Figure 1 (cartoon, one colour):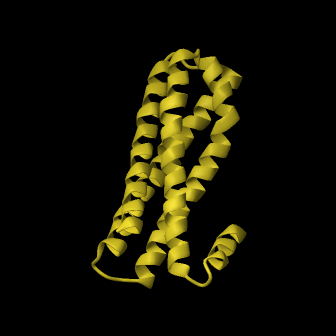
Figure 2 (cartoon, helix red, strand yellow):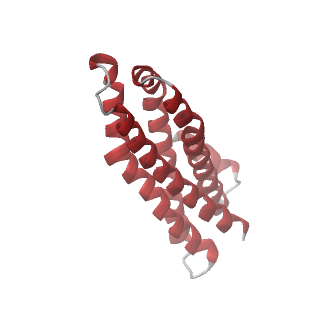
Figure 3 (cartoon, helix red, strand yellow):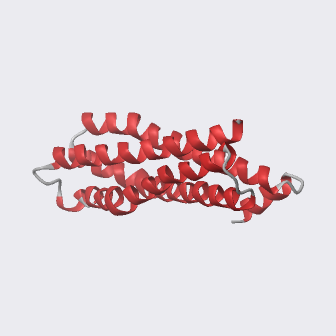
Length: 164
């Protein structure tokens, strides 16, 4: 919360530009972070035994999920704020609003599917992986790919709006 106000003041009163910066910045971190997880981490998932995946997941999942979720929310909220501050039918207004669809999709996939699956994977540390662990990991990867695509879609929309 405090960081938001520092950025707003750093823009010398141009709150639209400050919100635009936050919008693109948050969207870029979410898109980049989710794609790094998609390509680097899921590669590791395929090469490690399921019991090791549980330990690796426990190390990074909780922090990564919280930061990605918060930044996704910042992207959506700043897009809505920008639309309310400067309503119109131009690309600067419409593209961020369209991008919120990707941000919302990312949040929904995370909250209702990826996070519960991640919690179940972490629990493998205690009880061992189930017999269908490879199927669970494939499902997790596909759902994560969906949220990464949503994050990338949001970022592209946010960035295009800032550049136009």
